[in-house]
Amino acid sequence: MTRKVISHAFFWIVLIMIAIFTMFPLLWGIACSLRSDTEIFKYARPLSYHTFVPVKFSLDSYIRIFRDFKFQRPLLNTFYVSAVTIIAGCLINSIAAVAFAKFKFKGKKIIFVAILISFMIPFESITLPLYSVVNSFHWVDTYTGLIVPCLADGLVLFLFNQFFKDFPESILEAAEIDGASIPKIYFKIIMPLSMPVFVTAALMVFMNEWNAYLWPLVIARSPGIRLVQIAIASFKMERVTLWSCLYAASIISALIPVVFFLPFQKYYVQGITSSGIKG
Image (tube, rainbow, N blue to C red; front, side, top):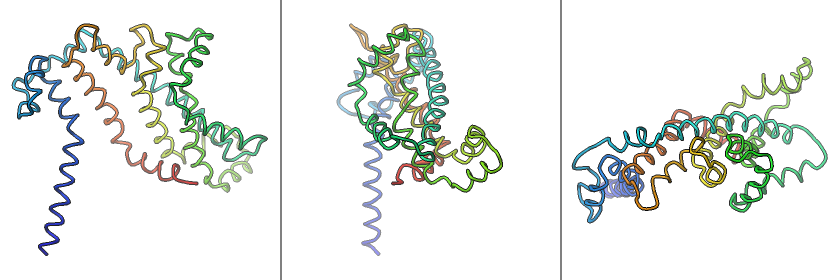
């Protein structure tokens, strides 16, 4: 009995230590966002109680990023780009996945393998050629340039394809016998029965867009269409870094995806387990 108690106690101690280690950056960021830059440097070293608990709590950094730096604009821009990319991207990739999963056509396997290879290529290696293409369409410094190159996603298509491969053929055949067209089958039958994988894909696309840095940095030149990660980086200026503002913006940027993820966590896990691990 004693050995069992000691084992459980050791297990929980290890878990608590891992949790503290994992939460350390977040706790540090929250503490720094609630104090002035002077206090940040004063209690940075050595570690003490006031390293994590400000001497004087202040919301000035949160007020400043919205009042002086108009941080709400990058947030709204990112929400807009993410929303359009999610809607259009899920539609495009799911339709393509239905074609790969349920239709036979020449070169199907070769095209699908090429798509799988595409999402294994680092984005940095195609940034310059992609920029040339976007520039030829005069989409630089536009929302179109931010959105269109991100619509077709090999990983999202693969996720949909794995789900649709096991979609009951009897349902589709019954709909065809009843005279339903392919668009009607897709929108009236496939989509309502595939909500978990759609939620999973939407969350994946949202996380990609919310954390995107390189492509928005290259394309979005005007402050008016700047996205959130670029706005956060702008607090690090040539001669000075506004640390409290940087931490405040980073905390907001980190918490928003969590707020979106938690309500749909069940559907996300369900979508992954029913799609991602199927052979």
